[in-house]
Length: 309
Image (cartoon, rainbow, N blue to C red; front, top):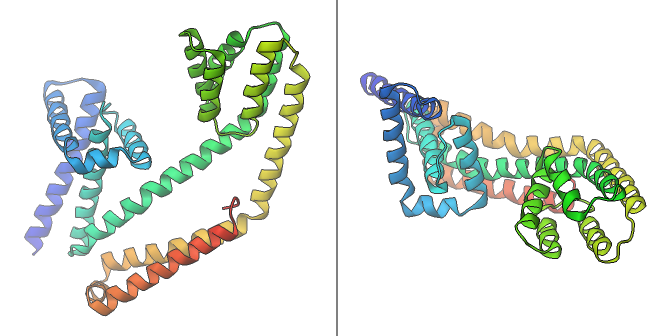
């Protein structure tokens, strides 16, 4: 048993080194053997990416974004979403194999699969919340910059281009895409309509509508944008105050929902008695019932605290 354990640990270590060296070779392009290793890695991921399950996962937004994030972390630069998704699942499988070796039970693979299935949507939700917060914080500066640009006599295309080229973050990238569409001949109404769909932030609808009206009628917008910037700032202050007031409740919800999952995962990996108990019908049924009760409690709390959590 010890021989099998050591050999399996060696296989896991070799696979991890294979991925890391392939990623390093792909990003640096140095050395004949690392380049060959990178080509082998790309070929393996290309073959896996052609399979139907990975193609299906690549069409799911959360999985696609998580796979792209992992691809950027390793610096491989895969061109296909399915290949990046295959790399993410492969890394999870390696981690599951390591867990199984530590626990000396196949339940380690189950823990890794469940962790991946729950972790990807959770990561994507946290990323979306962070992006919405960043957008909300950037919108007052967007209104003030637009007021300054329109007040100085710039055209709509020039103002949008200025916002896209002078700044960072999701708002600037969205305005840069809108500026590119305007330069390519798309009408202002179509370009600003797509900007409203891309930017989910306070005041974007007012901004695009006012810009269209100003373009058609020539009316000044400096005072309107200045007032809008003040209102958006006040809304952000109220949201931050609400977040502070409800911080304890949100932390309690996360702790209550996370601790049982971590406890079950930890016991499944380190306790042989717990593993044998979970594999029995009564143990598996009890665990499934507890999971359903935890999910139901979380859904009830989310409904009661809608817009706060």
